[in-house]
Image 1 (cartoon, rainbow, N blue to C red):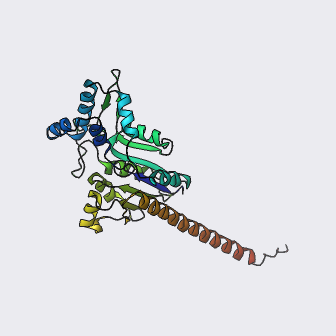
Image 2: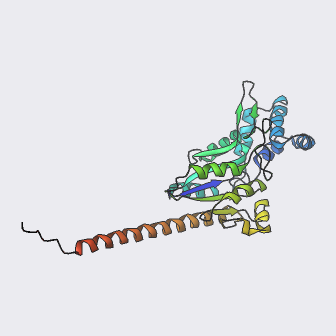
Image 3: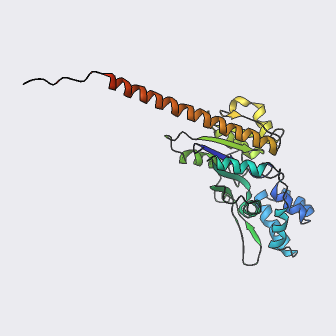
Length: 271
């Protein structure tokens, strides 16, 4: 439906793992990662890890091959394609990074299905090393949200998406996520929206502490099979309701026109 925006988190939502951890673990750098983790923010640490892996002789091709092996539930790709085919506007909001996400989406044949990817910028420099920078430059200033990590507030992204939607279009947002970073954007959703937290993950646990703080309808899921079933059911339900409203509005218009046509014609007045 053209009236639905579906916003996906990436790690542990579209894919079954944390893409940062996956690359670090698969390339044998877990011990160094854990050693450095207490010393710097996660986003800065991942940029540092890309430097360390490059110095150890790991190439872009090595990283790409690891990303191609990223685990994903077999029903997630069909769910994304089906939502897109139904006319939904699909977006990604993730605290991973652009190189990892685009590489995985390309491998899955999904790179053309998303209108936006909101994440930490990354690129391959002239030395063949992946460089990762923060979505929000927290060195210059804070984004001011105590719920989110310093490099990205997903709530700010959702507010921008909401602002971009015309009030006349009355679009609804379906937000899918799993982590604590998905709690802030969930709080921004409105009564007409839907949030799909992954059950027994941090977002679900945070919502369960006080569900009344969430204005949107809550629909939990456990795996890719349930994600597909619940997401497509929500889309079809919204579509059915919108079609019913259009038919009702059309009926009212026809009844009004019929009533006007039934009025007697005015007679001409002789001069």
